Image 1: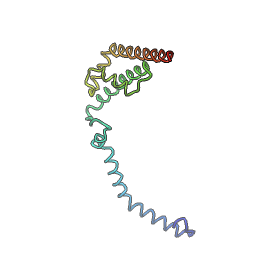
Image 2 (image 1 turned 90 degrees about the vertical axis):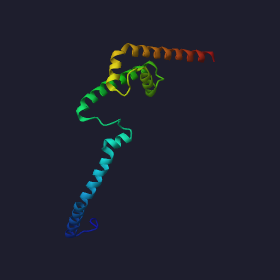
Image 3 (image 1 turned 30 degrees about the horizontal axis):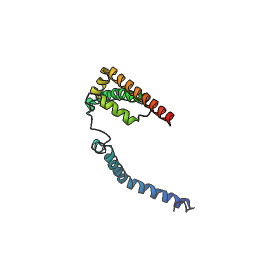
Image 4 (image 1 turned 135 degrees about the horizontal axis):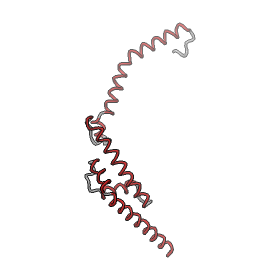
Length: 148
């Protein structure tokens, strides 16, 4: 209607009606948006979807995220070093090796971080072992290729 009207008075009347209708509907849309956000951003819903393991109490949040960040840095470093040692390893396979190597409770960020700090030589030895196996596999593949 607004686009088809050439009369300025009719145009302004239609704009007033649109503004009034928007004001009338605003609370309904606000309530729907709030409900939608509540369904997606609550810890219960996020836990049900597997995005988080659980809620972190506010009083422990700084400590929790400190150890989580430190653990993930050490863990990602070990995974990257394993993948550099054997280019055939996927991220998941390298993470599996790290999990198998770790003697700490995998769900305890502080314990895993401490394991990486205390067992650096064990991690280095495993990386050397993986590198050696990868080189041996390449040698075997090249030897088999030459024999063909």
